Image (cartoon, rainbow, N blue to C red):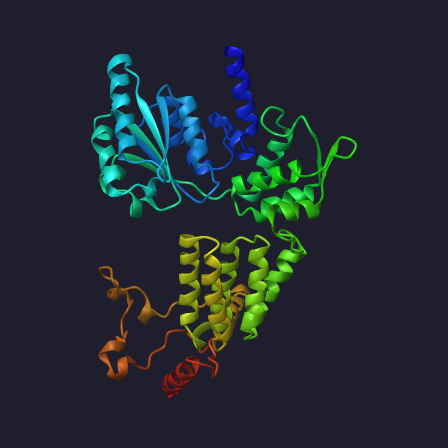
Length: 438
């Protein structure tokens, strides 16, 4: 019977997907998430000391939420249950809680319940957990792709440590892929698999920080490729089929990266929304970091649109916040809206040229002293030494303007264009500057 059980377990283990087999068993095997799981950090200490009430992990798919649950199960001395919130109900919860109470009473052993997709639990299901969490009968480890502050009841949040996990970096995904190829027990280490570094780079690029997606693609490539002379050779065509995505010629660290980013910026600057959206799509399809793209857009909105349409900067910054909040794939819609807005906005680089000219003057040694009448005069006795004397408060004058010197000598750095809102700015400045000369 024992042999049968062992053989059955081995068959079941072999049937498990690669991503499941390769999940870390101990803290030291975790890849990424250094901001919360590095040695000495709060989460590391809580797991190692087996001293926590409840924990909620939230972050994008494939970032290691379930892996951390398994590590907790393996590291702590508690009895471990797993529930998926999609299929579980209140009856399942009450059964586990009853068993946890008996175990604590009879053996003095605590229980931890891992709830995958905890955001799918309704209020009644979450309420059913609360009394026993409060009494320490059971601890919750929840995993969710949703922000728990919007999907988990406040009483449960207040009793939990909350950790946001980030999508994995490309180098971290590559490390996981290499481990899968080398691991003889859980991966393909016993097979002769030949895969060029460029294909590993491609998988890591298109996986979007999702380790599960990367491992599924690798497993599909290896298991569907016929060995030749005992070697499983993974070609680019096989990889593209496995990830169901064609490669775009786009080196994320080389010319393809910078050339495409340059084309994107110049298309927005050149008022071509069609080209702007195409280069945006190419970068996103190739796996470019959306935050890299949106940073370029924020710069373009200020450098190339400027005060011709001040809303361009507002739209770009709002896009940056929204992309960070929403994530891919929906973030591409937000990026497209912002890119089109910037592309069709009236253009002016007057602000860019103004700061460049002022910077150049200072760089060549033209450092002017602050005139006495606009120096700080808020402290006691400032005016007794001439600071702030004769300063005219503009709001005390008609039109909230008064002729007054703000530089010790005449300099003109900002020259507004005739485009968009800057045309009105130019008209106001023309009046003010003429008056200041009179």
